[in-house]
Length: 147
Image (cartoon, rainbow, N blue to C red; front, side, top):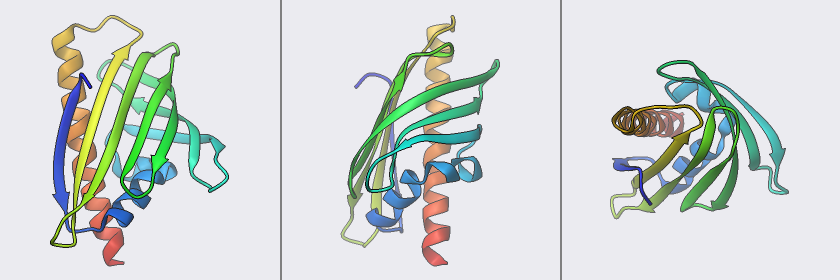
């Protein structure tokens, strides 16, 4: 996948990290820039199938809808429904259990905004989004796992 791919390790289990990442309603509490999430459709198992996000972008607020696929406890993937702010977006989280009992988290993201953004700024934005999301997800999984 083109775009940005980063990874980190956490002491939390893959199940715990999956649960935090699948709780879309909790994103405004730990995902930098996400100001609102509305789950529009859920699956039979209660996980979100489609959700609308509002994020504080570098230039303006950006609204988009994502559709999700799950492979519990190893992967959550998504793609955007094209809209006014996002032409294309796809990404995934992968969770791999480590011998230590922790988890390696891989986050991949590719975004094509529906408005003009120079390529280097788009790549910088992807890198910042991915890095801050990994930090937030790791912190949230470790904090909630200790509770």
